[in-house]
Image (cartoon, rainbow, N blue to C red; front, top):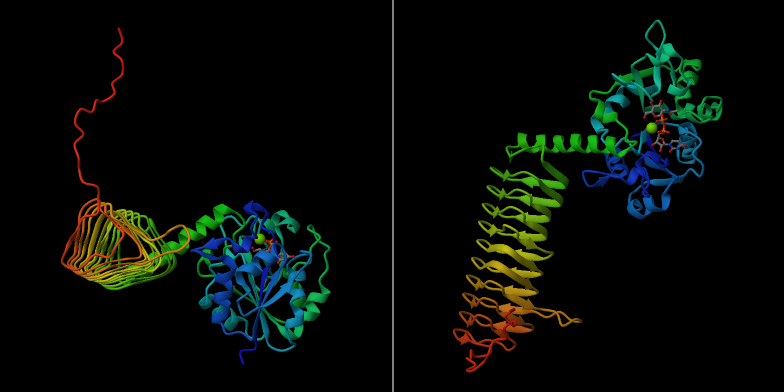
Length: 456
Ligand code: UD1
Ligand code: MG
């Protein structure tokens, strides 16, 4: 039993985000801020995680109801103390409670564990020193350097406002005192709110020591109130991800122009050029090269494969030593074997392409199975859809599909067959044979081309 209970405050509206979406659902690295905090909380293996929601609660639940947490509703936002109080039914008399914020997304377990260790059975308080402390609660210490109170900006006098040590908002509190302290809060302050910060004074009155811990880097406890702050934390998050990859030996041409919104696993000697976005779960094997401006979502890419610039890959799998792009589009369930070439303006969806096959220019391959060493000529289209149903195209090994072939599915092209350029293939093609399915070229004798009358 960890005896640890966590309360995450997430009921606020986030007025300064100017958004229809509640603040805590805005994302950092492709994941909502609240989900970041819940995931971090989970790593501490608490007895329970209790998330206080209010503004936009339907939207929060629509996205995160699968999380194993207690959702607590705070119908009126009467202050941080009131918010914590609304979660009290889920907190027993024993153990301790860690208070986190849904809009402080980059807090990490190392910091929280350190705070828990510092607090022991008493009160822990995560603090920071800021050049510009405006807006934050200031930490008041006595002559023995003990923390005696937190004064909110709006309640602070000039002398208190000059203090640069601030409350990050993250607390550890003993459960046997929590209910009593919360019930003793009042709203006699500049904002007419029940301040959680007033528990510091109550702890002092009860002779329970307050243990401050200075956060090791400001971003860890930084809150997001507007899009500027969100963007700042996004870049810090991305820099950290880039750093991890660089330290593992990945070459990022410019770590400042790199985004991961999910997980990215890289083998040895992977090179990633600028402005690429990786989302979902992406795996790049050894020696993979990703050209500039690629967008890659849920993909597994085999060793030595080169993805040329401006390619868009989603939910797909590529073997080793393949060449993709520039300007390639791989859509869901494109499964490409080793040494496949997919060139510019080629779209592949729900198709399997065998080893060494190529589709180098201007082609759509949908619902197709293609064998090995087959060449798909420029401008080929699998006509897989009749407006209602989708049908399969099956193409064998070492086939040569001529340029601009329309393959009207369902249709099968046998091994080593060839289709003539411009053919509309509606029937199965036998192996080893040339199929021509187009109008014969004729010359119209005596035809007169219309001309505009000559102006006089
Ligand atoms: C709070 C602290 C301040 C600290 C600062 C750090 C108090 C009284 N003040 O101030 O000392 O420096 O955070 O960022 O605690 N919330 C609810 N329900 C409510 C009120 C707030 O869920 O009724 C949530 C908000 O959604 C937000 C968090 O609690 O996630 C903090 O509330 P906010 O109003 O931003 O507090 P601050 O004034 O910033
Ligand atoms: Mg705030």
